[in-house]
Image 1 (spheres, one colour):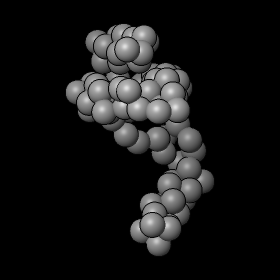
Image 2 (cartoon, one colour):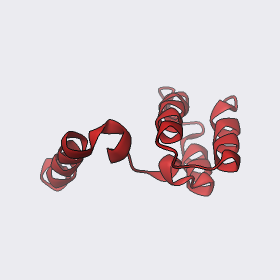
Image 3 (cartoon, one colour):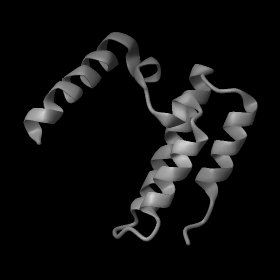
Length: 89
């Protein structure tokens, strides 16, 4: 697994160094892909170790960075905020 992940880790680290954390950030939240975020959360529902809670916490931090970057419109921000603030269950 490490051999497969190494290029991704190196690429991420290089992007952070070259672009900074705000511009290097990628993923469904930065893209405003509400459907993928919803599907990810559904897949984590009932998972052990508070994984859904952790996903929401990290998602809210990611959303704050995406907002700072200006990557999303107001509707996307509102929908993602609503989704990430839902209670487990």
